[in-house]
Length: 250
Image 1: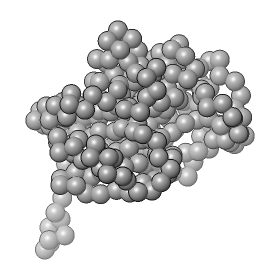
Image 2 (image 1 turned 90 degrees about the vertical axis):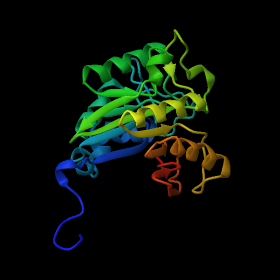
Image 3 (image 1 turned 180 degrees about the vertical axis):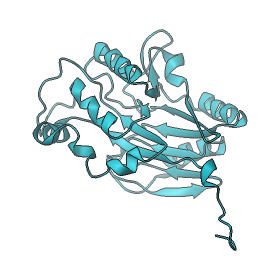
Image 4 (image 1 turned 60 degrees about the horizontal axis):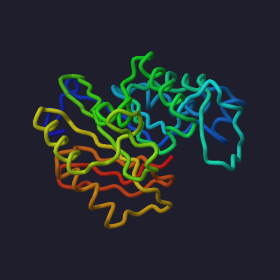
């Protein structure tokens, strides 16, 4: 506060909450079966529902054929039961990131079935779609005259998950295109938020190659660049006029 006047106008503010990678599988899903579907969100719900925009990065598709979960599932081929999506309703989801490398573990039918579930609920999703153009398209929001654009991609693969010109899947990271699109959206007045299902890491610090890739997206105009891949929370930094988080963790 400067003098007697605050340095911000609450009527022009937007609160955004972003999550790390979410997978309603294995031990998490077992706990949901035991304690109720909303159990994982019980203690953090207020943080999420009180935000003006709540972002969820969900890397596993829903399927009506998904079997009961196992707490220590050996095969890393994942699906979530359709009723588990009620958890996202419970925490007030608005925008769903779909850059995850497990999106098509249960096949293309489960992937497209999940897209329909999101659309039925009025949620905007990004970083995946019915074709490459849809997967690359930004998800946009406007609140209190603030205009946001979420855009994301997956450089790590596997290649089978990537969308093609006429085939569904996740957006691969075409960095020159992405930088151009970030700049275009910024020039159009959007606050651009970029999220990446980057190469997996089991460490808390960022390597130089990660800094290079994340920082060039910030240089293109992204206000936030966030990693959705890491199982551990990683370091963060303010870079120029941007906030970079190299990996939020599970």
